[in-house]
Image (tube, rainbow, N blue to C red; front, side, top):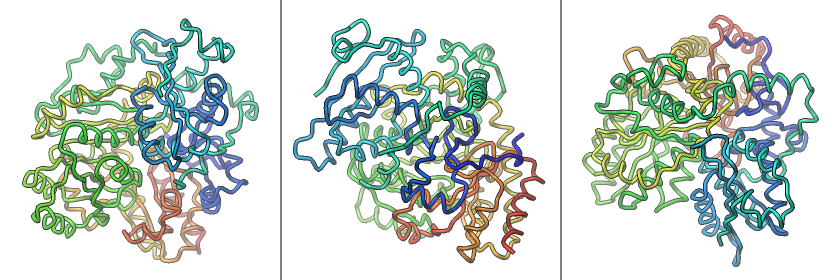
Length: 585
């Protein structure tokens, strides 16, 4: 069980500590978080880790440097993807948004010898003018399609093992097969990440990190990855809940799904390398299979969902408050003859924890013929059943499904009850490609085996913390599904033994108390959520630093503190936060 004894405090160190592929990073104070967003050297120079869609892992940086030196031309930069198809999407995106009149953007595909039969290890590189780095990285950020750090680590080892000169490698078909084909928001995070090299770490730290990585993942033969992915898909489909070893999974008959949709099986579940990739591909699936109309983004979402709907396809209608009255306005809009392709929403939303009225949304969808796409990441399918109201359900497996904060992943589920099921399944058969790296799947499966028991404990802890915070006079608002004005809509979907999840947000009457409280809490502090340990961040600063006024229009306070509750002992959790509150006196 995690404890508050030794939370990571060193600026820029991974969360969890000694984790080579950690998906969070320590920003231990409010001022450090602001300085990070401002690109201040005293913070940026210490960043050894970061959330993978916003920060290039050390192994990815090294792989990029290698391919730029071998295959790049003068003045070119590179970005790497796990498939040629994705790289081509990046190239198309860059051609569309570049301001250069003559931009030479090309794709080079490299076949890297796989670690095991049936494991895809090819990489595709997009080369582009150096001036277009921010544009290329915006595709990486919005879509979640970038190469994973574990895949980069593997490819780096193999490519270094076949060290050749640039000219030799281009002519060696035995080593590689080469096939050349002819915004400001997060740019600063990619231009010079300054990740510390392994020489900066102690031998003990490196050895311990290697031990953890091997102990909890690599001792499973990578050739079992197909079975691993079956187990993952069954767990997501609700047909496998037992904590079974992989050797037992295929010997056990999957039971009827617990997700309240008749006929749902693992064949309706599709895995993606990140949660954002599942959202991006849900939208791409609809664009490929249905008439292309604008979509609706209902409620205030995580920012990249809105970016996806606006930058790809016909665009988006934004109902950012996500209130019942917004559905009344939407119906008037549709009754006037406007057609939409889909409605995207989170259940509940991040960071305000509002729950949309899915029953009413389903009624409107059936009446006006549009697809409903629900992101269940925050609620998770052990607490809520949303698939019966949705046509597509997406989720970030990086979060509470994994819990260990050491691997990325996403899922997309098609509802067999949907009127669009046949066309979407047929389109998926043509469009889908499995880009989840084998080792990532192995870690994700192992991490998720105790998913059910972890959810129960996190539910209890989050409610206990809410009770404490609700009684604090300095706290203005506590955002949590149980105490939201939209609770009835959450309860409509809550499972028989489900709780209200592990995510909550708070706003203080005075901004100075928000900063002092955040600095005083002795817990992990950084981006991400759904971790086995409690994790805090000044959410609006991290997610909307350059657009705080816009976020405030939809109720997202500039000084909002988001808290992802972990598995610590409940008494310890309450005392830790009580102590931080006492520090404000």
